Each structure stands twice: as C-alpha cells, then as structure tokens.
Length: 432
Image 1: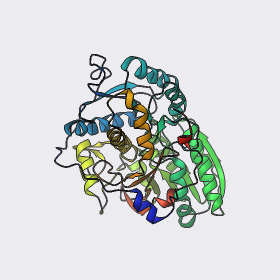
Image 2: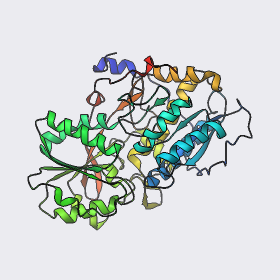
Image 3: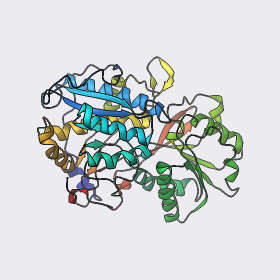
Image 4: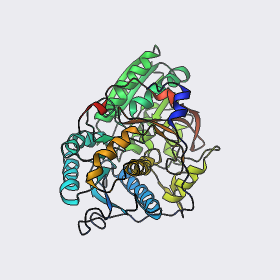
C-alpha cells in the first residue's frame, strides 16, 4: 500500500458519525480492584487492564492518563458499552518501573483476566512488558512514543493506534528546524530508550539537511540538577534541541536559562520538558520566542475544532490546558489524548469482530490490523490519522508552537504525509 499520496490518504480515512448527545463531565479516579474484579462471569463485561504510572518518574503523566481514560470510559458506557457489554477498567500502578510493569501485565492476565491492556507510556517499561504480553497472548495497546514497535522489536499482540512515534515526529520536523533555526544542533535528552530514539532520529534528520550535531548530551531521567551537563554545549551551537522527562523538568529549563543568559542560540524543545508545568512563571521568561513540538496543542488555537472543545470539557480541562478552576493544575495535554483515542480504537476493532470474549481475540486483533485510519471526531480529537496495519503504528499531524507572551501558539503543522517513513517490519506475517 502506497501511503505517500493524498488520494490514498483520502481513501484511507472513511467518515464516521460523531458521538452526539453526550453530557460532558469529569470522572472519578478508579482504585485498583474497585471495579472489574473477578466477581463477574466471563462474557458479562469487557475488562481492560490499565497499567498507569501512578508513582515514579512518570507520575504526572499517569495521573492525567488515568483521568482521561475514565472520562472516555464514561462516554463509552453511556453509549451502551461495546457490543452491548459494559466496559470495566482495572487500574494497577506500575511505578514507572520495568520489573513492576511486567508483574502488572502478569497480574492482568492471571488474576484479573482482562480482555486487553492499554495505557503504558514510558518506553523502558514498554520494552520490558511487550515481550511478556506476547508470551501471555495478551492484546497490549501502547500509549507511548517509542519507535521499537514500528522497528519490529515486539510481536503481533502489540499496537500503537493513536499516538505517533518519535521517528515520525522528528522526520517531519527536522527539515523545519534546519531551515528556520539552524543546522548546528546540540542534543539534550534522557538517558534511556526514549531519549535514544530522539538522539538517533534527530541526528539522522539534521544530517539529511546538511547539518551537524555539535553535542549529544544524555542525562539520567532521575537527575535533580543539570548544571554540570550544560557546559558541554559548544559555543558554535546554533540550535539547542531538548527533551526531558521526570519530576525535575522545571528545574531543567530554569537551569538551562540561567546557564545560557541573554545571548543564547535558538532553542527547540519537545513539550515533554514542560508537560504539567504552568508556563506563567518568571523563571521561564527566557523561553520567550523559543519553539516546542506538540502533538495536541495545550492552548486552544484560533482554529480549534469542535472535537477539541468536546474533549476538553469531558476531561475537565480549560482552554489553557489546565483543570477548570485551577490554572496551576496543568495537564500532560500533548500525550494524554492517546489513552482516550486508544480506548475508542479498541472499541472499533472489537465491534468489527463482534468481540464478546477470548474466543474472538484473534478476530479482534486482525480487525485492528485492517483499520486504515481514523477521521477527526469526538472519538479522535487530536485529528486525522493513518494506521499502518503492517507495523501496528499510527501516523498523524505534528505541531510546532512558539512560546509567546506566556503561552504556546502554533506556527507550523505538518501533513500526515510528512511523518511517513519506510516500513521496517510486517507483523501480519507473524503467527499469533
């Protein structure tokens, strides 16, 4: 299938009717075992395991992933569930830890006996859990951004149907960075798999534009002070490219500003470095006129869709990306849509397979592989997507936003075609 033509893209995105008549509202967070325990009998409900990062370095993401998933689950059940069955979500904390993550996957399979698992974000946890999910023949839907899935490192039970991977993101934005900001780039990234994806793909993207990498600085994601790393940025650097995660992201950007002062190179960051961080802080003033990648813009834009409005209301988030009534409680807005959309992607595949239990598991997975894409809607508020059933990876729009006056304004959006790269695997040739 040639994904690189507008005609193909149009053909791959059939229109779907929008969800209508749903009362928007917040959702209660679900404690482990509060719903979905084994009291019920097989076939009376669809049970989904949700291994959220309630603790550890991913806790800020986990809190918002859980809140968003509950809001989506509420809508699904108000619409009659999936194939007439109510949907239950069982939450377990993986501690953002690979070992604990594997234990949770096993618990979902043996104790909770769920139909599928979704919600993992941090790539080092995903890397440990995906092989075990395959061994357990557990459908495992990622809400991550790592490239390992599309690179063929996992198995046929693993999908990433709603959020794009780092290679897709960077390959679409690398040319813009080189053309508009500079070609001598210093990379700062977390010292684990997600960071290596950034390092490898941004290096390739800049070199493809005739540029060079002046420094490649890996920082442990548990680091609390960054001053000893920043002097490694060479003086001839034209662009600092940064992506950082964990509880010390605000410290990172503050110390970066203190180190650079007023005579700084251009700066391009992934919003990961400021997810869940309020931007109206004096310490962040140095970010004025710098740029960030966003998957879904935190601030409502002038061309905001009705789908974005619906989604914000359902999750309880205002036009600045914070909890309604609490501007300091900022969402991980550029990532958390993935659990919302992934739930609806699973719902679509289950409906196609008339899924009612394990007997339809393979049919459901094959249905997921056959879905060509998703149209922008209340179900998919981030926007149109093309899904590659061979690589189990979704492709969508990316946004470059400029920090201006204490907020982020979108200055460039890619096409879906900009994000394509050649297939590196074909999971449909693997056995179940």
